[in-house]
Image 1 (cartoon, rainbow, N blue to C red):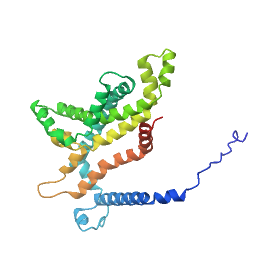
Image 2: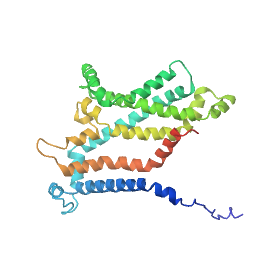
Image 3: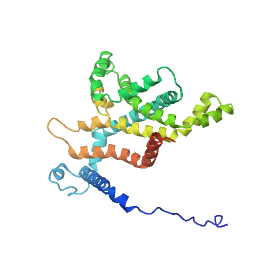
Image 4: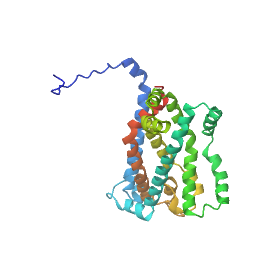
Length: 294
């Protein structure tokens, strides 16, 4: 009866183990210092984005008040809106196609023991150790030889193709580990009930993997958003540039418009930071699910 009338259940918490906590003290201290240092830097950039160039160099931020026109100039005159939506487009399309390609591939590698299975997995792991800077110039030579850089649509498609390609190894291996640890009991029960392979895959396996799939998608979204080398070397038009490269264009031959640069940094960074904080719990849960055998 007590449960029916909404009586609150007692919650019991484990006692604090002071010896264990003291051993973790140095780690807590370093983490606290890192958070404090990061917040101080972000606070400085935020204040600088509302200040003038003179105030920034004299270290007297916001002395003349808030200059909201810095954000207007950055968004309109400095094409922050263009690079922002370019990065958003590249990130969303790349991550979507990456999951569509890697999820079935990872499932096949984890469930079927075919001839080249181990070889493919070894190749994927080995390719993760190849630095991007090693392949940028050869890829540029190939793309330039095909005359792709002069076509906007082809240039955009090439960039998305490369973003997918460089992230396939990590995504596939990460998902393979998860599917390998996923119990086969669900699939066996579905097969007994007459459920076909593809129906089982899309109605049972992938829904069970949705937390890990969303985690990988978010992580790769950040990876594509922050990618610099390909956008710098392979993009031939200012209308196709991404955020990391676009922010380096806030300078003329002799000067840098620091207020607009700071406003551009805040405009392009805050949405991603908010996205991370909103999904941080899911990211952590997904990482644990992908690393711990269930």
